[in-house]
Amino acid sequence: MIVAVDHVQLAAPPGAEGELRAFYVGVLGMTEVPKPPTLAARGGCWFRAGAVQLHLGVEDNFRGAGKAHPGLRVVGIEAYAELLAARGATVTWDAELPGHRRFYSCDPVGNRLEFLEPVPG
Image (cartoon, one colour):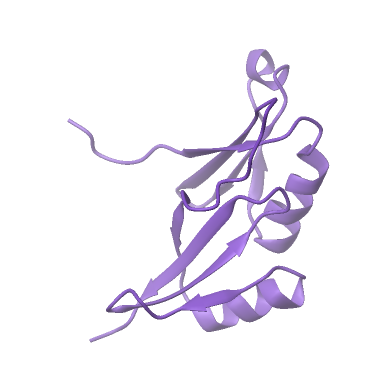
């Protein structure tokens, strides 16, 4: 029986770890999680915010995910969008999901990220 999502893995090109750290820590405000040594040798990096974990793994013939994406629930979406934009991230609002405010952004290697917050009432 599935009870929760443990993490979401996204791909990244070899050598992109510095850019990813700058974005996921410096822009999104996540914390880097050390990878176990046996996995660290493969490259990539892991991040956490509360119970949410995103793993970025190295893929040789990398192509950014343009449609597939994690949906990250946030609190205070307007302020969070302003913070991301002030830190240089793209913020593209979308009003197509009833009962939610949401926007999309992309990490520095082209992975699509969705940020959403339920609308009260």
